Amino acid sequence: MANQKQDSIMSIQNLTKVFKSGLFKPEVTVAVKDVSFEMRPGTILSLVGESGSGKTTIGKLILKLLQPTGGKILYKGKDITAIKDKEGLKEYYRRVQAIFQDPFSSFNPLYRVDRVFDMVFKSFLNEDNKEEKIYKALESVNLNPERILNKFPHQLSGGQLQRLLIARALLLDVDILVADELISMLDASTRIGVLNLLVELCKKNGMSVLFITHDLNLGYYVSDYTLIMYKGRLVERGSTRKVYENPIHPYTKMLFNSVPDIGKMWDRSKEFLPEQVVHDVRKFYKENQGRGFEEVEEEHGVLFSDTY
Amino acid sequence: MRENILEIRELKAYYKILKGDVKALDGVTFNVRRGEILGVAGESGCGKSTLASTLIYRKPPLKYISGEARLLGQDIMKMPEREFKKLRLKNISIIPQYALDAFSPTKKIKTFIGDLVSEHGIRPNKKFYDKVAERLDMVNLDPSVLNRYSIELSGGMKQRIIMIISSILDPDFLIADEITSALDVSSQRFVANLLANLRDEGIIGSAMFITHDLSILYQIAERIMIMYAGHFAEIGPTDEIVKNPRHPYTKALLASLPQVGIQYKDKRLTGIKGTPPHLLNIGPGCRFRFRCPYRTEKCEETPLREKVNEDHYVSCWNSKNIGSDNHG
Image 1: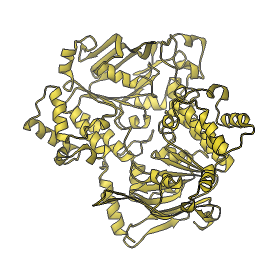
Image 2 (image 1 turned 90 degrees about the vertical axis):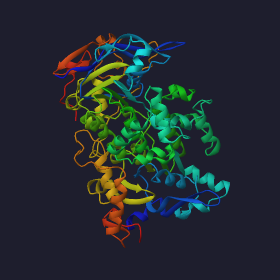
Image 3 (image 1 turned 180 degrees about the vertical axis):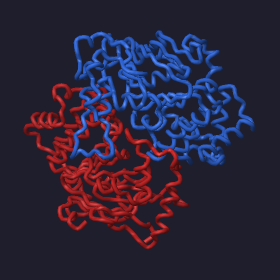
Image 4 (image 1 turned 45 degrees about the vertical axis):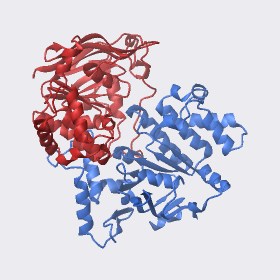
């Protein structure tokens, strides 16, 4: 990972987030534990895991919507938890933005969609050539400005709204884009367009994208690097090809065995229960006691045991 | 060829609203055979869930317009509600979409199941719960889940319980509407295989598996039907549909599916430009023509269903021009 560090724009180091609920007998949920990775410009990093694995929590920590319990998030070398004043936050959000799963809840149904651009200009940009900039951004996400502006969210499709939000991120010229299940609400035929666009713009503008997904096929298609999360732990990490071709952690193996793929049938003789993964992982950790997160080859690391 | 358990002929059902008719299911014809799992796929708004609702409960604004749906020889469209109620659960049953969210948060699973089946005239006595326990065992759940609340169970566990309840009276025909959509991949696989197992063990006769995910259908369905914007597009054996699609929509849909082994760097997948048409008061003609690269003048007329191969039917005027060679 040494050479990755040099040009990384965001560095996540031993990140931990613990949620406590209840007053007298607090119940502790460890949502994210000891997660480290680097984000580099012009690359797409996919964060894969089941619901409850902590992938969205990581996204929220990066967006400063949550405060970490432990560990650091360094953006251009500076710890973002130290950003507290309004100016600093504004500067941070100028460069770090997110797009979420449900496009319809990202827009206020009472206002026209242009409002997202108005807000962007009001908060972050000077209003010179505003119209021209908006047109340019919309055109670069393959939307016809004439047909989009002045519409209400319900008049547009989910795919169009997601493109619009990408255009918004483009206007800001963001460094880091957190795309949390960006396309999981879109139909198969429209989502590929949005995905292709995301990759294209990422490469062209040198954006660093954290692509949070539960869909392994989509993750494989777009990403340069893959992170696999399981119960708050980063269990496997590396270049997408290496992780997919040579999975080592039992959870990752199970994931790849379960992905439905056209042209490849599931092996129905090897039926396993979702609950059984827990046992497999426990056994794996026990066998490898004393080992921690290790690099098994270049750009491929695996968590061998969680008790190190 | 096996006998048909369900025969659907030119079935039409519209949503009647103030502005007119939303033609969500507009003349669909197909059969479900005994013992098969028929996959039904398409984008949101293609009419696949409307098809399920039409067969099970037609609540306003959804209104049956015309056509036939014969279940075991009886036309259930013209059957009075009181008689149809006798068929539900025993002959025809459904696992509804979003059933995961339908559990009562304040009732134990056992009470919830009891209330549900007594609606259908089954007494939830010891014999009934013994049967439930036996089925729970089949899906690897401990009978103690019956004394838990829904928030204590994972999505996959809840979906398994729903599948057991829907099939508790061994229905001849089961409709499974998006049963895998809200689940993680591991539960997805288990639930999909469970549907096949229920059929293999004779607990359910046949099933119609509605989903937007073609790759899951590939795993368990014998035949696949593709729908587009309320119209029938194509039906055929799974392998044939996947390898030799003859409807331009099916072809485009398959081309847009990402698969492990394909990276953006190496191969650019293509989506379909545009969006499905609005179905309110829509006129005749092929509904895919607005997005179709093979469009001709003839497409202004609604295409007829025709046989293109053994067991393979397509509704497209230009299906002859759509070769199988240039996909994949």
